[in-house]
Amino acid sequence: MAGIDTKVDKAYEGKSVEELASAPVAALQGVSDSDAEHLKAAFNIKTIKDLGTNKFFLWAQSIAKLAE
Image 1 (cartoon, rainbow, N blue to C red):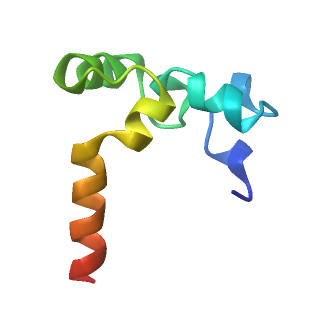
Image 2 (image 1 turned 90 degrees about the vertical axis):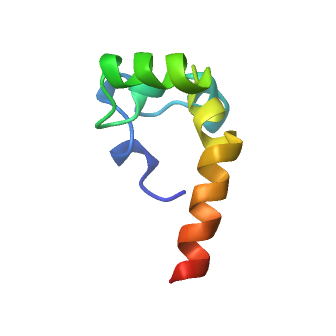
Image 3 (image 1 turned 60 degrees about the vertical axis):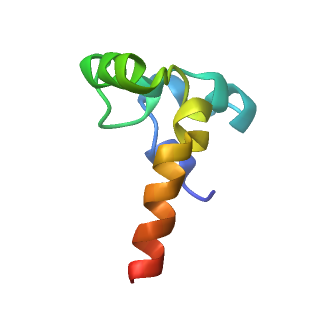
């Protein structure tokens, strides 16, 4: 993904995609520690990979794309 460094906090810039997948959700720009705690409590999402592969988020993304 081009420009991936613009999607993550400064501390995670330059990391490999494997490292980013294992990083906490709060490593994404705009996701606070509080947001990350809510995602963990609601969906057991702890990492960027967890977020990207969560079935509810994938279902919602699919529905949104089909609705375009």
